[in-house]
Length: 355
Ligand SMILES: Nc1nc2c(ncn2[C@@H]2O[C@H](COP(=O)(O)OP(=O)(O)O)[C@@H](O)[C@H]2O)c(=O)[nH]1
Ligand SMILES: [Mg+2]
Image 1 (cartoon, rainbow, N blue to C red):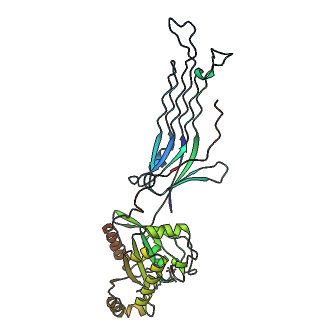
Image 2: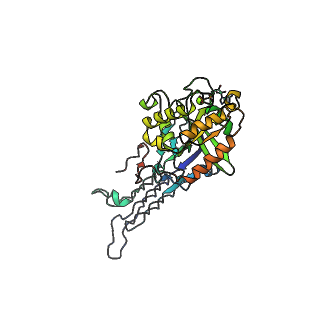
Image 3: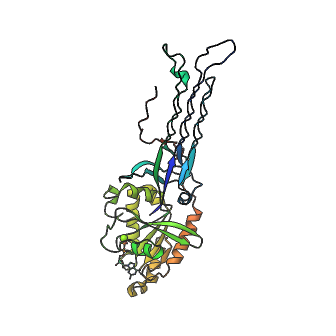
């Protein structure tokens, strides 16, 4: 699930170099003293925690950095054009949009402060002071500034899940996700429907969180079978887990313990995440008949449980409201300590040769 925008960025053109000669009363034929133009400003994209969506880029699509100033006499160099800094949400993926297909990745801005240069400013032209030779001591030439790069970009915000939905295959994870969000996961086709987490946005009053179904944690998932990079990224960043249990299972409390063991083996940090436990399928008569027994068996291991039916929606709003308030009580974990300020540069492009 993505928030996406397409924009065009134009770096500043370089300022022009000038043709100028020293003019002083007592120096009748002063040498060339034309200064260089300043470089054009770059367009830079930076991840910023204060920015939460790409909405502004849907309204305004063209961004231009400042031109370098022209040079002047007395070898005065023109000022560099100011860089244009575009701030985007953390988790934005920036790529070049190619007219012929095959967009190319520039940067995955995963950490606050990370930057990428997305259009390089044109170099300033050289003034005539550079062009004097023994045979031409009064050059009448100066260079124009180079044009700044212009690039079409695609900005995509990857939603990062706040809450992970775990449990054995067929407990109803996909059904619950579909019931509480607009996501359309595949239901009960086969146990490992997807290698990528399916995400949905759950709205609770004015607030919302991103819920991800985490498939296939069972059966040696901790051995790394079939789990992609995206997948890991998502579960690692979740702050709360909803642990779903099949109310029709012969020993639901044991199921819970087993999934938790698997989870800790997979990643001990995952095993530490706060969980809300919910028994699903309470619409089934055989489950309804044993609610008291189920409650007791979870009480015995010190776990508070919710009772829901993903199929009818019973109890799901309460579960989501509880998830929201648990989320609000947990601060957003900053990944790692110090932020590495890694600057990405686009592929070098050939410049016109400047002597
Ligand atoms: N009766 C009943 N069936 C459910 C409920 N939730 C899910 N199911 C069924 O259980 C099966 C597995 O559901 P699914 O959501 O694919 O489970 P997942 O593997 O955990 O994602 C499907 O046949 C669902 O229709 C529920 O609340 N009540
Ligand atoms: Mg599923």
